[in-house]
Image (cartoon, rainbow, N blue to C red; front, side):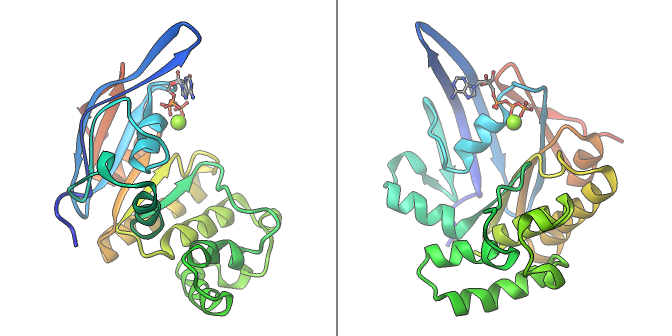
Length: 231
Ligand SMILES: Nc1ncnc2c1ncn2[C@@H]1O[C@H](COP(=O)(O)OP(=O)(O)OP(=O)(O)O)[C@@H](O)[C@H]1O
Ligand SMILES: [Mg+2]
């Protein structure tokens, strides 16, 4: 049920009030992400990449401008509808994994399904399949602290995937990983994009990540420009 591209930003602006000062962070961002695309977002630290991603991920609202998700203007949707979109259409992966420390890998992956009201037994059955997909089935009874960084990120990816989202949003998903493990994690995203047709948007500082993405945009002074994909 898609009435448009997964993401369409039109002249998006975001300002923060810091005491008497107004900080303009996004100054008219326009971006269309097409269905099935794999896009890298680059740009200097503090340029507004995460600010934009949090708006795309429905965690924050813009000060002005339009964000259409699959053709629907999100400004017109209720919080309940937005929560539903977040839970069913989007998957998030963060730099610091953001797993629940006291839950096993398996139960971390179950969470999005439990929010939907699925029984724990059914959720665990489904979660096992997704952990297998990211090569983590043998470690599914481990707590996050008992896993390496790359393994934790695989669990986080399984958690992002279990809702069967149409789009994955990843904010520096390889930033906390060494080069080799980072590449393995990126290969998982590449496979999801190619084999399952999932739209992937990745914030990264790493030109080699951008190279694997096919298209890259650069955030600079609060606006986006096309960026040549590094050779
Ligand atoms: N809640 C807030 N209140 C005030 N300023 C904020 C707030 N959140 C972010 N900012 C400012 O917005 C700017 C952009 O931050 P953002 O996190 O989007 O940068 P980024 O491009 O993701 O950087 P990095 O590559 O370091 O993650 C920063 O200057 C930051 O200080
Ligand atoms: Mg950031």
